Length: 106
Image (cartoon, rainbow, N blue to C red):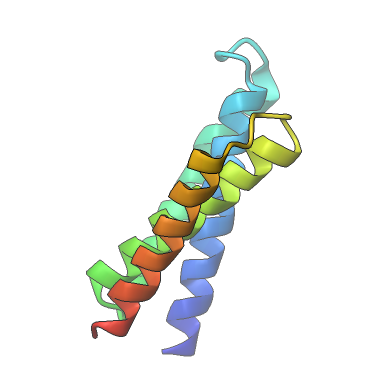
């Protein structure tokens, strides 16, 4: 079971890397980040598929999408200097609460 969680964390890290490359590709005008989008997402879905061998899909997907969203929002705010408003903060908090809630309900 622990290995499934490790696979899930790896899937999240590669998904966040792929999404970051989307921004860095500047609409597919930069070749290396454009290629890395597909590489990172391919690796991401491989690890997510491996994680789903033992984890419930509802839990795995909630953690994958929720934590990925929180991480990419944080990268946007810190690295890309995106706005950080009260609404954005509360929305991120609600995502975290939702992921905790889904994990608590099993």
